[in-house]
Length: 193
Image (tube, rainbow, N blue to C red; front, side, top):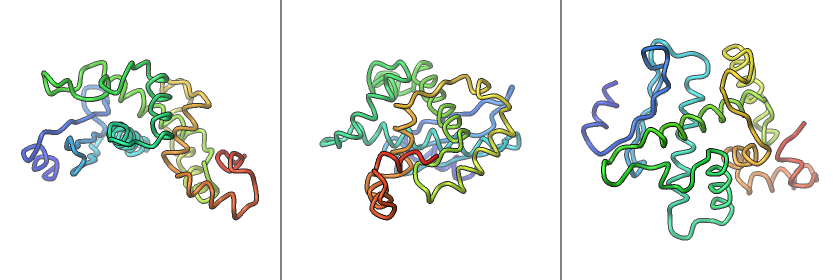
């Protein structure tokens, strides 16, 4: 809490909260330039809370990177896939309004949908590379305990958005190294069975 308070005083920030009834399970507070981030968990947190907040963090980083000059074409395609999935028209829908310096309610909704989709992706338990299989097995177990049915997250995942999440967690270099080590086609190493 002290870190979050100091961060809030030091620079313009955004906070994304995971609601829990009338309170908050967890939150992610970040400076506009991402030089500072604070992930907070409350007493009402559950096994999904940290994973949900990490989903926010990955998305905020992706949005920031997609706005940089000379962005890699792969990241630009992933951003377009994310925008289509969320129903957003542009990256501007996902960042603070320049006039109010606040994230719009619609923007917050897009961020929350992304974080829930990330939870759903992890709940499937399908690691993008062999080295993550054990972690994904645990994520699946935790999230099944929290959400008995995927519909509890109120999201559906497409193969395209699964691919975006795969690439967020395992870079093309890692995919290639896995391919080189296993002699499997790279695409097969993205979603092991």
